Image (tube, rainbow, N blue to C red; front, side, top):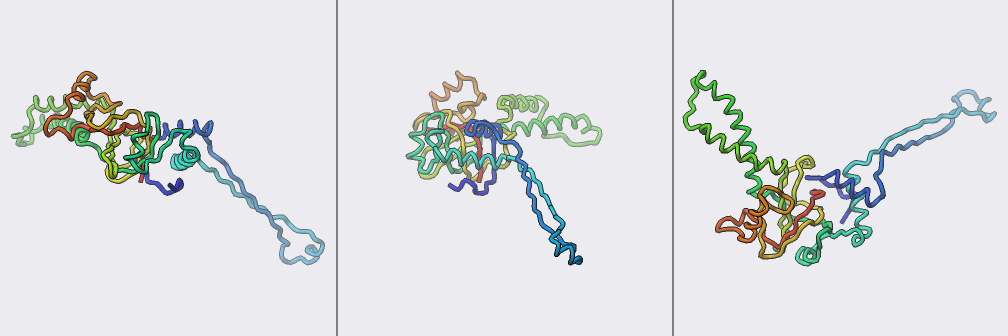
Length: 271
């Protein structure tokens, strides 16, 4: 791995990154000021007597600059630190998922390249939130429909609109969080992790490198509902356990994540 390679971050949890680097370096770096000075001499160009006497005027110039420890620079430094002694800090660069992940315990931080996406079940909740906003706008405009002679035939009834808005409680439970899933090459292992909206910088879709700490793992043959992955709170615990025991019904496989899989506390996603 080239620690200083240029990275385009899709996601970077800067608060978690600061904690990691602080723990490894024993503190965080503040802004660094740099000064450079050059000196020379000038003889004025015309008075030969003065030049022969060895007298010259000094000429000085000074430049100053301040360097800030940016998140990108901090992340590159973090990679350099963990690569110096990966075993001591619990760091694993996943090169062969089928071999590396079975021996990765909870608490290990992994770096893995995979194909990432947001599951349809999670996307549906986000779309409900957008639909609810649209229905709120409709509610505010409907009183004026008769005034302007607008045809409201076929529009959702008030009861239907309120029913849809009721589903936004699901989105409220997530606190705006979303869940990403990563499919790994040449193996049936998969990764998943919550993504906080305030740290999101791009679209979660396509090939990317994911860095995160393992918080849970489950074996092949065990299923986890997408809306109740470890760390989420969309479904009550008892209902979640029942769903895990039963597994998906016919046609419901896309709403579950089958093991072997690991859940991550995601630090960064980049290309």
